[in-house]
Image (cartoon, rainbow, N blue to C red):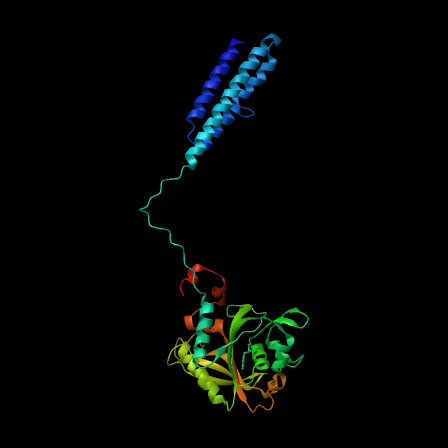
Length: 337
Ligand code: DAH
């Protein structure tokens, strides 16, 4: 019996020392497990009490309980001491340089779109916008794409409902603008466009700037003059353009506009695949068929229109090899612009 009491005293002394010395939460927890855990040394002692002769049990039980109580209190005090030490913040050092908040900036696409619109604004255009979810009527029908006509296949459409789609181009803004305004119209319409397309030069969401001029006596010379002025302002002062015959349902005649290769200046290289030219945009003279949809018949006007890919223009201007760089949000890329 006295042997047991001595043992309890010795274990308690060791436990108190271990708790007192613990300088980290981990060491304190190890000491707790060692003495107070389910298989801890003090806990074990309380179990031996039951195997003593009945007469000895009360005194032994009391001794073990006292020891447990004291050890638990010491453990709690040590835990509180460590918590206090850990929560004490290092002092304020006024000599440290301040933490600068990182400043964001406009995304390359938004900047390019603004830049394009500003160039056209200097040429007398005003900026208008239209919805990204369009009706079949504005996206196709009023632009002279007949229902079931193969020309619709060029535009890999994303439908969102009966007769509703994500606009495949900004051209519907031509119709929406003419419905609301009488000539003269000189507008550009920037915005997001969507197609079922995804590779290194196509993204399912991309950007266009549409242009529309309807006025007295507008000819193809005006189209070429305006687009040439744009190309020299946007790329470089000596950028040449050329018009190639093409087809769009809403322009007649239609032309694809190329710029002299930004890399080789027209001599032929890998970027322009040896041709010396890079395709920049679609354009043409407004097909008079559109006028019956917007009440312009009998106005005696003519016009031209164009649609420019903003992502493509940015890729050409900044030499980007993959359109996905624009949409991955990688700061190492974005911070370069
Ligand atoms: N909307 C055409 C497209 O996305 C581009 C285009 C071509 C727009 C000719 C025009 C135009 O305004 O006149 O493929």
